[in-house]
Image 1 (spheres, rainbow, N blue to C red):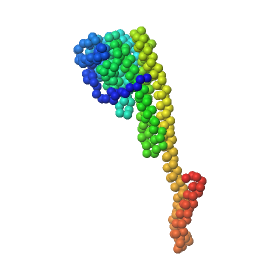
Image 2 (image 1 turned 180 degrees about the vertical axis):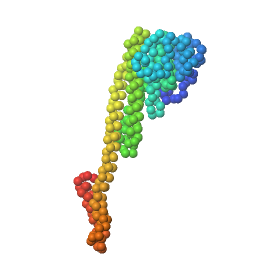
Image 3 (image 1 turned 90 degrees about the horizontal axis):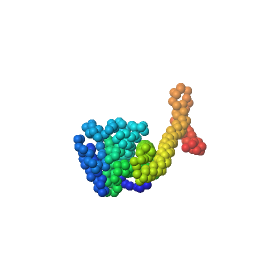
Image 4 (image 1 turned 30 degrees about the vertical axis):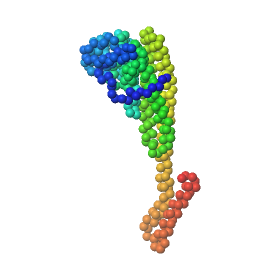
Length: 333
């Protein structure tokens, strides 16, 4: 699997700018056209991208769509029949794309409509991998002539990025084992484990979603894919299969670290409770002696004795010391 640095994935600036953007890619040169409602889609368009389309833009899209245009709720549907299907407008795939935001990982739904002439994408949020693909096209680093190739290239970038995210989690967890046994860092360890568990869950969900998308294309869209496209799909499916055990291993490791952290936290609390318990037992005999001479009975010879007070204090210290050394000898301290 190729490794790349997704330097465009954390940027908040969308290079496209317009809500509707048409891209043509000829001789490894990207031609960008910003469209308004009412404009015609250029004949050479390879990719039509709609970012946060409003009602007017959706109505404009319906003018050259045979079927209903999916809205935001349709894109978020999780059942297979709503995420992968074909109609008169071509192949429809709704896919989750990972998005790192600070130290967290988010999953963003993107709707793809693979038509005869171009690839249509509809999304409600900016996606770093789409910016990265657009940047690669601008630099002429890709040789893409078909919308199928464009979609598969974006999926290839996604699989590579998911692999990088898994590697990031491995790196983060390298030193967590030592931090588990540090009282001062224990709160941070719990937060870190929770955050990485959530991130790994979203990564695994994206892997499974991508796997289902590729298998659907391989099974039901095979006649429209070239041999090169089918080879790319097989390679991506193989990469996903190899990443699944890593994701499961991370889940197991996170569970082990969580159990270890909770066990160590419970052990520390038990030590504190043990100290209080021993302290209470150590001071029990002195308390008994002090309470005996605090009963204020009329006949208590020691009350009138000159050395009564020093004797009572000595008895209390001796009983406390005796109890302490008894516990120490037994190994309970």
